[in-house]
Amino acid sequence: MSLLAHLLLKQSRLQPARGAIFHGDAQHASHAQWAARSAGAAQRLRDAGLAPGERVVLFMRNHPRYLELLWAAWWAGLVVVPVNAKLHPREVEWIIADAQARWAFVTPDVAPGPLAGLQRQVDAESAEADALLAPVADAAAVPIAERGPDHTAWLFYTSGTTGRPKGVMITQRNLMTMGLTYFADVDAVSRDDAIVYAAPMSHGAGLYAIPHLVAGARHVVPASGGVDPAELFALGLAHGPLSTFAAPTIVKRLVDHAHQHGLGPAEAARSFKTIVYGGAPMYVADIQRALAVMGPRFVQIYGQGETPMVATALARHHLADAAHPRHLERLGSVGVAQTPVRIRIADGQGCELPVGEVGEVLVRGDSVMAGYWRNPEATAAAIRDGWLFTGDVGCLDADGFLTLKDRSKDLIISGGSNIYPREVEEVLLTAPGVAEAAVVGASDAEWGEVVVAFVVAQPGATPTPESLDAHCLAQMARFKRPKRYLIVEALPKNNYGKVLKTALRERLAGS
Ligand code: AMP
Image (cartoon, rainbow, N blue to C red):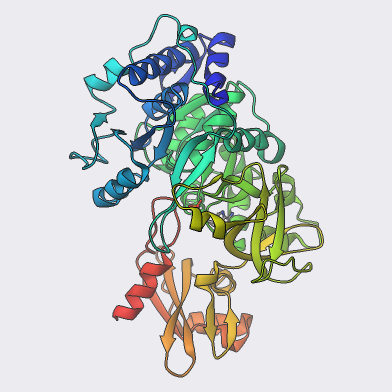
């Protein structure tokens, strides 16, 4: 049977009356209510003709019903297709068609109109959804669908920065591995703890519901459904210190908020137990500031849709170990392989490279996807001899710490030399007055490519191209330093907090 669904039934028996899902400060469901609603919806989805293995789309902002629908789908043996709430309706329709999904649950802010290709589109806040989720008297009486470890549970569409998105088939085993690994490599969780969903639930943040349900902890969805640092700090005071998954840009906003309001590590500790960051590069200057302002409540993970949340982790104690001779390198790394996987660096032919050499990052283990949905060619290219080729470039040190360079497509080749944008970004972030930086290559007749830096100033600061250039000259090889500095209001980012370098390159090509 679907072990994921069983997690909910188990908690509903062990602690039926304890609060499970909260919307802001208010309790939305106890474990028993959650199970009764999800089981009820599972029964009705089944009665409506949805058979195990069918895909249902969730196209919603963060919402308490996200959790109820997720577990309803798993109870019925369905495959959830989580869709990024910021996608354009045309992009969602492409996913609906590719996934061959007949049903979608939406929130009206995200999907104001009907989406093409569906048989049924249910507004998760409507009376129709209330009826679907009406609790059954006995959740245990609704059979949990027979789904084995190799059945797909989560069909995650890649962000498609390199061509069409692909559906990543994440199985029950993958998710259970991810959930249990949280306890081994990220954090201990007790039933008195709570997770808050700040980042989108359609991504890793939502998957962290699994370890928190395993532990019988509470799940808090902010009333705003988004990321509002003041709201998150206040929620922590109301519920007790929260754990959360945050992209580096969210971490930055929390740290800025704490700094602006004179909150130090002691106050941060009252609101946050653990902040897991990942999904995009965290620069050394930024994590140092975060640790100084908010104290030792950070853990980094590196993963990707194809091995969700599980590749490496940089533990709290590694982040705290300032006396270690390689502390700075470790801060700039993504940590060591998480327990269920092995990590290898390979050359273009897939042959393992020695310690210290830069190559593609390969991952192998039970968190790695079954393959791409209806795309055997892409699957064969991504998984070879059991190893997932991540497309990320990096190197391992002798202790097993992985440092990511950049994705190969972001590498800049100028005058025949390889320049990793991240290195330049790390230096720019230490320049006075710089809040954010992103570096891309612009094509150039003489050099092939030249380095261009986009810089966001700190409030009230006015870094100039001259001051930035002087800083870079003092810190890095001449050939790596940007030829142009563009001071911008903000960097383009996707909903998961990743800087859209393609958009920056397009901006340069169009200028
Ligand atoms: P996604 O599939 O949307 O989760 O994106 C995964 C990609 O985000 C990875 O392949 C990396 O390029 C990047 N990424 C994830 N975690 C980290 C991290 N901790 N540091 C740097 N980049 C990361």
